[in-house]
Image (cartoon, rainbow, N blue to C red; front, side, top):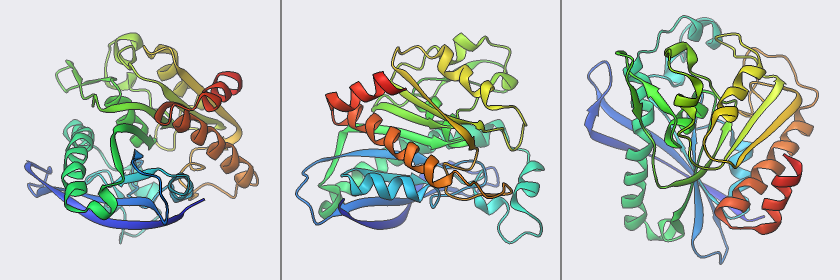
Length: 294
């Protein structure tokens, strides 16, 4: 494992504004290995869940960076931790009362290609780290709301308020991981195949038998709809026995202690490593593990 360092910053999108009229700013956090001779390394994007930020899921990203990946976390204004920070009450109770506009959700999706373009420019201006970034080997990932953002980046159609379906896919991503996939049938009357059939890249879908939605309340089985209707044949599934919604984030929210946490995290890291190695490093052994295990 390589030593891992962090870099934080933010990118300002001068072409977009938030619902309150403020300029759209996308904070980021980059995990990158140091003291190595790895040459160009694959880059993995991470999109946080509702009420989260760029600091979530650190156990996954530190591990991957230690293996020779660049891992790039985004914060999405309007669905991030600023919704509850500094307010009385538990964050989950506050978030359950928040209404998110369709435009705010779409802004999340648009953060991804914007940040990708901004990162390419940053890499050229910061060659001591950016020189190790391989923009030809890109993966997309995210938890919960971030899984929805991942689904969109990989081809899922998303309905606007008028019911029309739109494409927010980002062609540069080769594959992705959806931690707690999010079905969107509640937003549209369109059939599942029309929504998810356009997901045209390999995806690892990760959930657990206790992975109920903390806001909508549906069970983990409902999350499998995304995988069942995705268009690309390489759709993998890991279901953690006893795994809940927050196991991927590294924090518990309102959930109690998880006695299986260490076991679950080890299972997550094994699957994640093999998936990225298979599709971003063209590792035949890792691909065989996926085919035979998931």
